[in-house]
Length: 147
Image 1 (cartoon, rainbow, N blue to C red):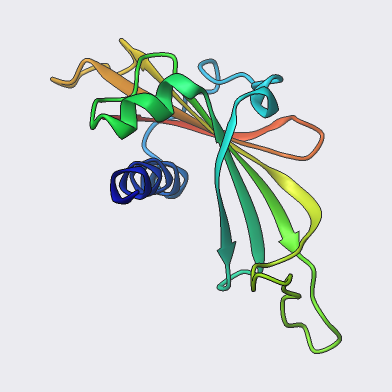
Image 2: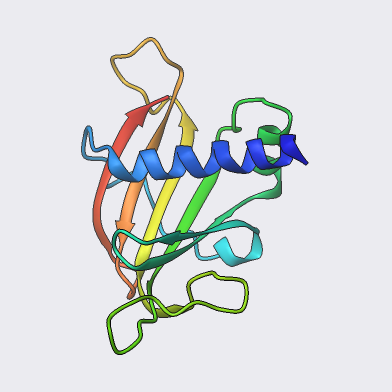
């Protein structure tokens, strides 16, 4: 169970850090993954700092690699679906019976994709490209980052 939680934590941390770091524009590298919901929703995150509820999706192969402590395979896509948390009259997030935020309106999507060869001018062989996509599935901005 601890290994499973460690794998989930690793993928969640990778996705969160990728969403926070911008290095170079890579608008041509990311496409909206239309089939993301057919993958595995491997965790949800309650963001108290901005009253958001996040759902993270990826492919089963990425989950298996993380569980084994292996690098995520080239072609791995992690999709973060971002919602506002429902709030009460005082502006506090509404929580379900388990104490987790209740999702409200869709804000947008964060997409991280890893590909071999996306790391120009580095010693690394692969990189991730990140995209911030609005609810209508149009790109807001994209970046690349060597990994």
